[in-house]
Image (tube, rainbow, N blue to C red):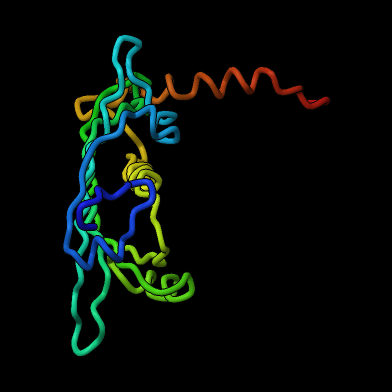
Length: 180
């Protein structure tokens, strides 16, 4: 890494790990098109920038050569649509992920299923912006809803007749059998 500042769009992960260096910054939501497409902020609100930080590490396990790791930390505010009331709301979002880099896609695929951390193939350069965007999309809530949003009110059915009304209306539409 030395005197030249690393380019997060063409990051040399091996060099970052060898030096134990860190890198950080922020991107406007508009610079992450897939992330921006997920947002539904109110008309007068601009989506918050995405703040990110990475740190390269080499970890030794037994007598094996050092493993290359990248520690990724991302924070921002997401603007999902509540699936209960269909109103947008803001929700803090944080990603703290350890990523292990190995030689080749086959080794990454074999090790990824057995590891709590993500395992990726080491490439000469890494597009950190795409990686950050991928991690944000994975962190998106599966069923977004307001913390204070409650279930819609239910009408109490005291004698069972109110629940039968829709079925009675459907029965009236059914053609009557001849001869009954």
